[in-house]
Structure formats: C-alpha cells, structure tokens
Length: 133
Image (cartoon, rainbow, N blue to C red; front, side):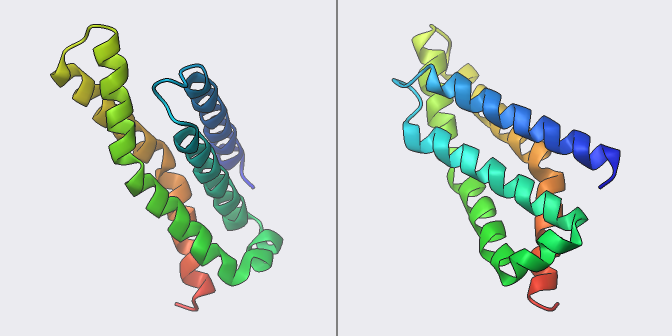
C-alpha cells in the first residue's frame, strides 16, 4: 500500500473516531444509532480501501464487497437527513438562525462525501470486479 493510501486511512479513521466522540458527548442531539452507523460506515470504507490495495483481502472479501459497498453508499445517502436535522437542533440550541443551521448540516454532509470519495472509488472498483464486470 502506498504512503498516501496509508495517510488517507489514518485521516479517515481519525475523523471517524473524532466524530463519534463529539456525537457521544451530545446524546440529547445525536441519537446513538446515527453515531454508531457513521462509525460502521467509516469501518466499511476503511476495509474497502485496504482491499483495493491488498490482493489477499480483496480475494477474501470476494462477492462480500458488493453488500459492503452497497451498505456504505446506502448509509451515506440515508444519513443526510438525520445529519441535517441534528445540525439544525445543535445550531438552534446555541441561538443560531435556521438558515445557518441548514448550511452547517449540508456543509458537514458535503465534507463527509468529499472525504469518502477515495474510499467510494476503491469500493466501486472492488465491487465491480467481484461482480465480474
């Protein structure tokens, strides 16, 4: 695995743990299923990225890469709504405006998709190869 892939995985893992810890401190705003789902999605992204660079892991996953990739993408799309609602509740509780709350929610979601783009690329390539395409 090249150094930049290792650096990306370390960044992805650090952001996932930091996000989970931040959300864990705000249980009245962030439900447990949302923070745990985000952590599992990050773990799936890490596994898919590692499998892209490691032939043994890729072969071990086999067709299992397809549901992992599907679950990661599905979770990311599903979690947009709850993430925006959580940001809305947090900003409103701190006295911010409704527009600012929505902006925070969508900016955080955009950031998550930008950070996940390399992992999604790796997952897509592995899932496609597992299907024999």
